[in-house]
Image (cartoon, helix red, strand yellow):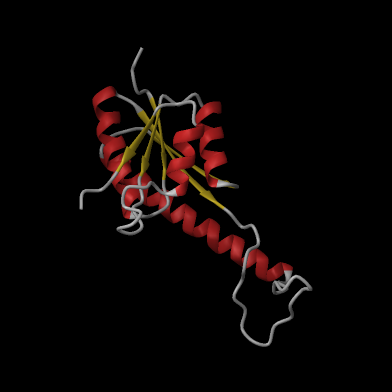
Length: 160
C-alpha cells in the first residue's frame, strides 16, 4: 500500500494554489502517486454590473438575457480549463500521472464530495492570507475543506 497514492489539488489560478501544486508534485514523486487537479466554478447569480440603461427586477438585480448568461458560463468554463491545463503541464513535466476535473457548484462542497467519492488519500490546498489582520486566518474555502473533508488536508502557505 502506498501512503499518498491519490492526491487531490484544488486550483484557482492563484499563487497560493500553484504553491500547493508544487508541494503536491513533490509528494507524488516521492510516493509514486497520482495527482487529480480540480477547479470548481460557480455561476450562481449575484450582483452583476450592467452597462446603463439596465432593467432591474423588483429585487434590484439586473435582468440578463439567456444569451448573456451563456456567455458568462462559457467564459468561466474557459478560464477554469486554462487553469487546469496550466497545472496539468506542470505536473506532466515532472513525469507524474495527472487528471483534471472541471466542476460547477459550491467550491467547498464539491472539493469535499470529490475527495470522499474518489477515495483520495490527501488533499493539498493553498492557504490564502488576505491582509495583515487576517494573516493568521485561512481563506474560507481552505477553512471549509479542513473542517468537512474526510481525507487528510495539507495546507500550503507561500513563504513571505
